[in-house]
Amino acid sequence: MNYRILLVDDEPDILEIVRYNLKKEGYEVSTASDGVQAIEKAIKYNPHLIVMDVMMPNMDGIEACEKIREIPELSKTIITFLTARGEDYSQIAGLEAGADDYITKPVKPKILLSKIKSLLRRLEDASEQGKIIVKGVFIDAIKYKVVKDGVEIKFARKEFELLQLLFSEVGKVFTRKIIMEKVWGMDVIIGDRTIDVHIRKLREKLGDDMIETVKGVGYRLSE
Image 1 (cartoon, rainbow, N blue to C red):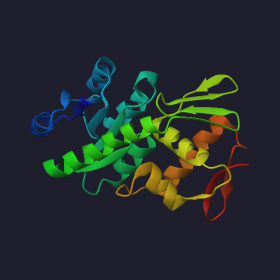
Image 2 (image 1 turned 90 degrees about the vertical axis):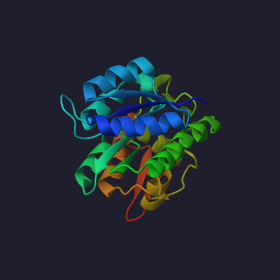
Image 3 (image 1 turned 90 degrees about the horizontal axis):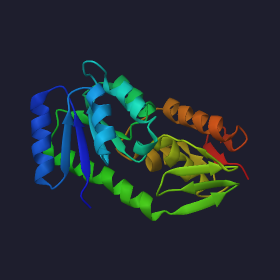
Image 4 (image 1 turned 30 degrees about the vertical axis):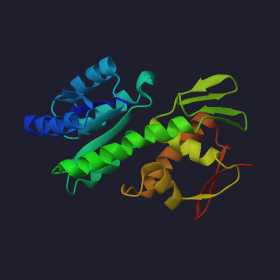
């Protein structure tokens, strides 16, 4: 598959280096220099993956990510942030804004390519999981579509992946560690607050009685 990637950074040198390496691997690559341009180009090109810096002029990456996540046509787009070493706040804020991952600067081409291939495999994995109906909720993994009581409900990407995990086995308790590994990946470090925020959003959209908290352990879909 010929994947489309959007690179967003206000440093021309980084854009050129990353663009060169990605094009060499056969990816279609577009670029933007701030959050405003990122939204415009994302709507126009519908990329499979967006690699975006956090600190940028006009509109930073966090705000741009939040706005992109509000666009239904871009619900399947993977977003990963570029963050400087030690920017723990940016990493946590980015994940809570709806990003899927982050890559630490300075960017090393081999590590970047490996990370991007890993992220794009998630799209392939999602397409193989098909459709399920559990407790009156219809989930279509291919279209990132959720319908409850005949009404379609919109979920950000990470919310959707967390929903899929919990709905994969009714009554099973998923520990925080398993949720982190399955939804955010082994090499992404997030805090409990990030998981709590996403669980709260699921409850707001599906109802408080759908997901149970097992104190000191994790969460499960109620039986």
